[in-house]
Length: 366
Image 1 (cartoon, rainbow, N blue to C red):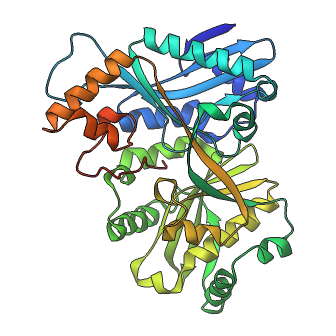
Image 2: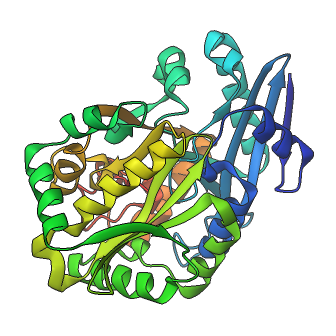
């Protein structure tokens, strides 16, 4: 079995992308963008045996902010980039759980040798479906997400739409709202203003705020990046970014102007994107789930009204070095003037990054 840590310029990374269906989240351009934003190191582990190939992209993160104490040696953990990078697997892997288990064992060993004490990876809700069927004990259930089946006819797409959403879409059209897909670069300022207004309105966590360098960096994704807007009387009132890759469209970031919330133009926006995506020959429009994978909040309720298709949202959580992991938990507890057992009870992973002030906190979806 070949096991190798690779960087973004590796031919192995590019070969895997060329031969295996993938998403934007696994591309070097996206990993570069996320590494800059999070001040981490973008890497992947490549594992191969005959026709069975795994590519696991991740961000290598130093654990130097757990407490005020300095470490005698570097300790790291790894995390997925924002979104669903998951595990890129060739089709043969799904038929060989033995290979997968051996590969994960090697994965843990090579990370431990690098000083990594834990792994938190979000699986890809679409691309990892077959993998999950044969390797499910390795994963944690976090909820569900919603995608729209673009193989359906237009009439079927409409029939699978909640009646309330249908009424809202028709109302938006009667009011004169129009939706179209445009260049993000051309409508950059309008999008930023709407997105920031939306995040402020919903009092979003800090992780949902992005600086200007992040948004300009998205332009490097080129033809994989799209912006859909809804306009009224020459004013952009609603906007959302989407990724498109290998037949999968992913909703990324978006929002609505406060003064148009009552009219719910985002319904029209998603309706337009699914018809646009279908026309371009795509298979899925993945619109995600609720906050933290919730299936009970208003965000999930809204999204679920556009489709009957659901996907399990799963994560991989591994402790690769128990001694270092528990050492960090003790440091974190001391820094918070708390007890390690209370941090463990929070259910947060990795435990040493838990905030004891909110013991019911759920792992963010993205």
